[in-house]
Amino acid sequence: MTQKLIECVPNFSEGRDQNVIRQITAAIESVDGVSLLDVDPGVSTNRTVVTFVGNPDAAVEAAFRGIQKAAELIDMRKHKGAHPRMGATDVCPFVPVSNVSWEEAIACAKQLGKRVAEELNIPVYLYEKAARDPSRSNLSVIRAGEYEGFFEKIKKEEWKPDFGPGVFDEKSGATAIGVREFLVAYNVNLNTKAVRRANSVAFDVRENGRIKTDDGTPYGKPVLDEKGEPVRIPGTLKHVKAIGWYVEEYGIAQVSINLTNIEETPLHAAFDACNEAANKRGLRVTGSEIVGMVPKKCLVDAGRYFLRKQKWTEGASEEELIDMAIRSMGLSELKPFDPKEKMIELKIESAPLKKSLLKLNLRQFCNETLSDSPAPGGGSVAALMGALGASLGGMVANLSAGKRGWDEKVDYFSAWAVKAQQLKDELLFLVDEDTAAFNKVMNAFAFPKDSVEEKAARSAAIQLANKYAAEIPLRVMETAFKSYQLLAEMAEKGNPASISDVGVGLLASRACIAGAALNVRINLAGMKDEKRKAALQKKVQEISAKSESCFEQINQVVEGKMG
Image 1 (cartoon, rainbow, N blue to C red):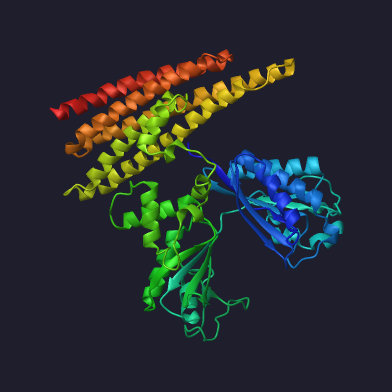
Image 2 (tube, rainbow, N blue to C red):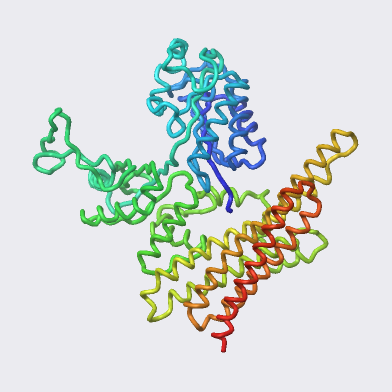
């Protein structure tokens, strides 16, 4: 239910002309729903790496506009630079950040590749996870020969582009579009200045490990295999590259790490592995630092991991989990770690132009609701009631997990508290989304209606907006309904002293569902698609009936325990 985010990192073959770079980034930023995170030009490479994020549709559109503008402004016949390249937009990878599957990301790459080929007449090659031919998945293999060599290379059958003409465009060259893992650059601080000792820790943890020697020392004779190649002793972590270095600015040695698959080897696993390896060598990890930006999930997962190690409930808020991760990994040792600057989702949310009801305090929210503005209205308030219902259920789970004498039940209650946090976050997202949906309806009614064409466009926009405005409160109903299972478990097995909190949560969830149902119904009134309208009405009736049944069953338990 939370926002889908995908990162795009196009590399443009211009790093010296700031006017050209500004025009390209302006084209990218012209797309609603896209946030430009970084622009990194290089003079010697004559190349600019641009990083932006957005929902999948917006990211594809922004990438296309950037590639289109680069093709217009950059002439590869005049390009010289230290970095290998083959086109005005040399490479354009998509990287899933939040709630985007690999299949969705690959679809983005293919959609963009097809459009670039058809509308701009530029040859496109798909690489890494988007590659159609495994032999062409490696970017360096595709780029071999670079711009100068591609005029002949493209004529070969095995180098026919995935999209576009089999003729090399002199001005724009070719483009590689792909999907890759999110790469995290991460440095672990040691209480030593010795690079050799930092390297020892790096070799312990990195996937490539170290070369095996006959006496087991770094200076011994390498052990060779039957092919005469050195035998390697693998390190403890998969998908990890690491080396030791000295940082004069801080006066310490670090283990410099690249994590190339944060799903299989997350940030906290790298930290703990370095900590263990350092301790075995008489060293100590004093902290760490993240270079660049990371998805929020990295620190949320780390926070849960460290709570789990403490045998404590993991059902903390995202803010608490992030703080736990920062403290546990010493991310502020060298300089303050600001989550709003280092985490992609929080960076977007902190943008000054992004308005959110969730940023208001309680008094401000009530004042805004009470004002003569029609939004926020009943839909947003219903979603907020649902979030409060889930929060009360989660509170009981957390209190139960910490109850003296219930140590063996920590994992059970912790799992329910985590579920409660997820439901709460989904419903809070819908608080804003319901108001946004209402505003879309108002905007549609404001469309011009002077001509026949304008009237048709206005009518279509109103219908689309009404449909969305009905679907959002239906999502609120569906999400809040999931809270009943949480509340039922807490009513039966939670801390008896908190049974009244379960009861209030139960009432809030029921009110949320009933209130959201009213908002679905009022938005269906103007919908002309009778088939869709009937389907939504049926869903509302089904969830409402189930809600009343669940409420009665759980309320009986609550009343029974209340005495």
